[in-house]
Length: 219
Image 1 (spheres, one colour):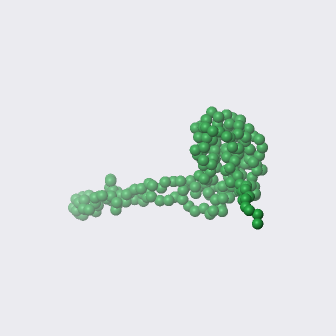
Image 2 (cartoon, rainbow, N blue to C red):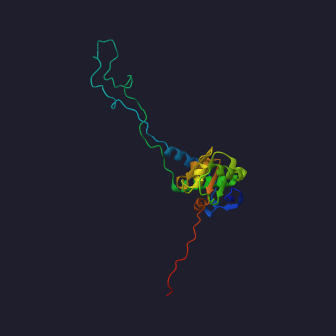
Image 3 (tube, one colour):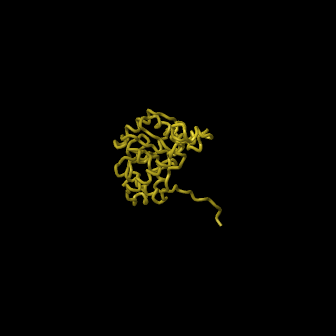
């Protein structure tokens, strides 16, 4: 099982294999749902706030005497039943995020990637060599790519948001560009198709860059 591997012009030139962990990962919809729900909750600002009767100004004096007026008794104009009074059980600043185990989070992320691989809606972009941003060139690139990448919205995952590739794709309609370090499972699932830079794909699949042997004096 592998993803499409695209040349610098967008043509499919082969397949980008999955790493051992990604290949062995079973697609678990219940984990994906749990993690996506938690991530969406973490993104809520939670800054809404209302004033209780203790926060509303005024109310230091009893509005009228207890008896003899013919009106209902009242002790404060800060009461929730008064206009301008406090709010009962209103929202207050809070954190909506829950807890997801790290193991479950990783499995959900791998499941989301593998689901795209099975559908054929994910492709790996070899270095393009673009030296300047060009939306026209990005459009031509996608026009040449496999038909599965025509599904929108398209998520483009890059290493740097300031790269020519990122600046080229971000102006296109229904195309979202994100750095790899900001990607979450909800982003993968929100895209109907995904385009990933080769460096990002290798990191996701556990590939290690070759290390040159250090030169030293012979003993």
